[in-house]
Image 1 (tube, rainbow, N blue to C red):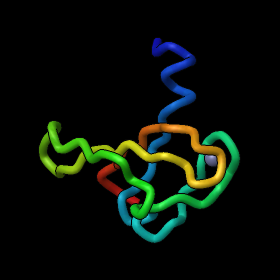
Image 2: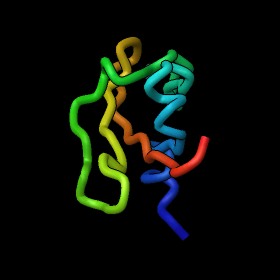
Image 3: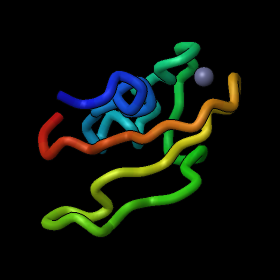
Image 4: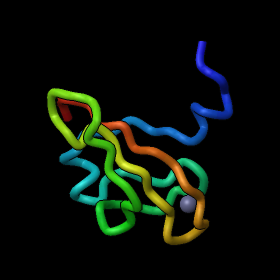
Amino acid sequence: MQAKEAEAHRITASRRDFLAYRTVCPFCGERVGPRFVTREHADVPPNPPYAASVRCPRCKELYEVVFTPRP
Ligand SMILES: [Zn+2]
């Protein structure tokens, strides 16, 4: 079991959807994409970057997008 708090700050999305701004902020629903990445995490193989830290442009919440290998 993961801590609920950590789960709230993490979403899972395909990289393709993220790059096309088809993911939304888990806090306010704003459409968010690569322009709002603050940091990419390339530490986990085989397809770096594996995840990205994102700051929502509307509500300013910081969360993590974990990329799935498939759409
Ligand atoms: Zn937001």
